[in-house]
Image (tube, rainbow, N blue to C red; front, side, top):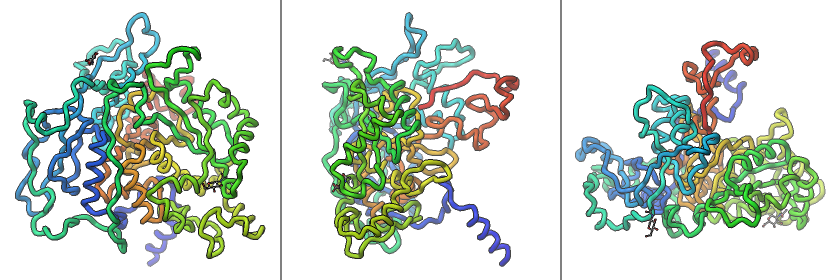
Length: 571
Ligand SMILES: *[C@@H]1O[C@H](CO)[C@@H](O)[C@H](O)[C@H]1NC(C)=O
Ligand SMILES: *[C@@H]1O[C@H](CO)[C@@H](O)[C@H](O)[C@H]1NC(C)=O
């Protein structure tokens, strides 16, 4: 008893941190039938959001390989031995998609004289092949951050050092262009003309033996929940290679970086904006009257959450926001007309944003009391009158006292110091990133993210992705890329709604895991976002990506073993 008690007390004492590994026996969060999960996969693939050759898990039970317009026709690498048609236990094997998209050209990217002093700009319309990146960078398969960064550097032409004792590094080319003229039509007939053998048929994928009666066999439904009604999905997008677009920007894939900021504008968002201006090809170096550039200029939308002010209808909210920005020495430079096409300050209004998501529009208000829910940990907002349905509605009817209490609670939405670190704001921003990506498309960046290089090629990859701390299997959505109005987004919002609107990154991992949709939200390893992290956590100390200094004096008297060239690039 004493031992058990001690363990409980000790573990309670530590409290939860953001990246606690959760226990593996977490209850299921799944509320969708297999039929719906199949539709989600098919929708994403048909929309060109799955440029990957990774297989679809067998649990999804797709019998016919979906046609994939974002993948070139290719000989199958899967060996037939992988399927065992007579397996009595579960569905036979994973399904591969059938590439019917444009051919890919992997150019040799080099600086050409006389421009060798600077690394080359990314080619407009080029795409990072994240399958190849994963091949060299995935921590789970034992890859080192250091080697990954070398592949990224060399493949992007950022390393013109004369390397010796290297074999062929053609396999390192991870940036491709789609050849618009080679687009095969998406009919099976044409694919059959291809010398490539037809896909291996894998019978029995959908119907495990002996369980023919239950189409959802093998899926674990959320305890006590009903299956959700069938998702209404919009028409699929059309995958278009960049070279076949009539203008540089693809209207279906807006290049917008979103950032969410609560409280006074400080040096942190200032740094983030500066990094954006310095690294992305915003075209600001061109004279104003120059012809419009051939590259798609990315935009940065800084979402300002006015905190408690947002809870009260205020026709001057927008005006107030700009007045405050103008006062701030960190924000005012970006109000210059020069930046009007690339930086936008936008007012965050929780009610308006949640109402803008059709999947939760009619139901989020019922969950209001638990709206600030993170990983099951609910922060209760002081209750309003029982009959009060909306966050703002009837606000004026409240007594001043009640209003004051509410303001006090919501007032904490600005984190001024680490001691005053505020969960509420974090929880709101956990949800905000999914709302923004689902409504507007683009990439969400946490406010401590600094862009280190041009994202041109990453924009080209239309699959959704998020950051992962490699030693944990789960997502971290500090960097989140999702397509506008996607089936994945619909799934996430409906599932979250049935799970208390919890958008904590670790919970979101469970949503996709329980539904076998993990493949649709690729987890990119540390090497791409935070190359020093694994080292800091005592991993890969034998071959660190950059010199690992343990003492301040090392900067002046560098240990012999650490005297190596630095590596890059990170994203
Ligand atoms: C594609 O075809 C068009 C006209 O048919 C041609 O102008 C263009 O150069 C071709 N592109 C490639 C990559 O071959
Ligand atoms: C927020 O949006 C709601 C609904 O659109 C609106 O009623 C309210 O006035 C807005 N609040 C502010 C501060 O603009």
